[in-house]
Length: 201
Image (cartoon, rainbow, N blue to C red):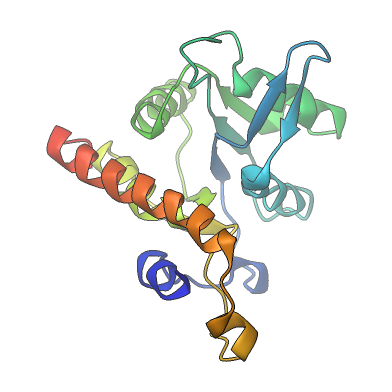
């Protein structure tokens, strides 16, 4: 599984070690579950997409946080991530002027289309980071480029592959996490093929 992810996930520069500044970071949703009783988002593993970006905003490396994500649930269309992410960002001191929130999209294709319409209407141009999980980046980058984005740089989060390990425990002892991880790859491969067939990517 490590080798499969290593072949699929892109290799990019380490943005944390470069002085390059960007006009904003486009952060893709799918990062948590909405708790309607407490009216907040409970961040999951993919919350790394947002958490990796916040320090770059406070350090001045990015000017705006652009979050895109509504509800991917047919049963609970009111659980719009964008609304609750905006609420969270406000709670940690990010001003409205530094946020652009898109909360109607239900998938990666709509992330790209709806966000571009919003950015165009606001006259936002320049260089932007595209922020998503490493295993999701090939499909996301293809979709965003097809949607007409230029000057977009991939920023990978929660990478599944790591440094190669040759220790006996890693190579020989069965690990149920390998099966758990496999679902992400299958989902992305099927998604990528489907998007290609539909002309989204």
